[in-house]
Amino acid sequence: MDEQAAEGATASSGASNCVVTERWIDRVAVVAVSGVVDMLTSPQLETAIDAALEQKPAGVVIDFTDVEFLASAGMGVLVAAHDKAGSDVAISVVAEGPATSRPLKLVGIADIVSLYPSLDEALAARGT
Image 1 (cartoon, helix red, strand yellow):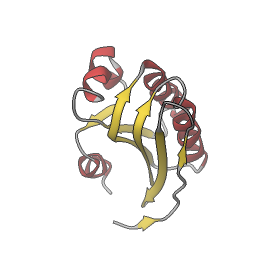
Image 2: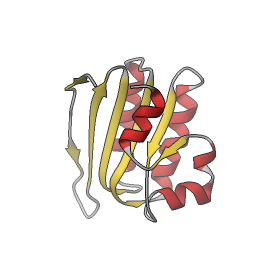
Image 3: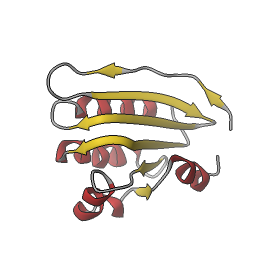
Image 4: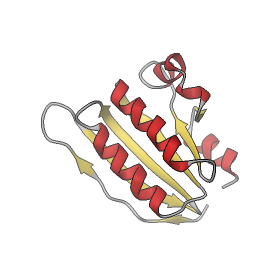
């Protein structure tokens, strides 16, 4: 896999801690998130996804592997990203476990974005 370094990390101040990084693997943007994705930190995720979409990727993979808590605000960002991407860009989410995949399935977001248990599986599905 050809990786291009295009990383930027930000951390929020206050009680909620969230770090968002972006990197590219071929023409797929991987937006990795760690910590808490809630009302205070979800704008960071939205900004990173919007920046990736502006680059006209073949796909965007949002990696929640290191997310400890995913609030409804974070799920709303995924729905908005799906809508912004339209049919041209596939949005995939890496989520495994009770903190991430379970809420995404319960709320029905897994019905509109592809959900994978690992980054490798998400990338393999994209053909990268």
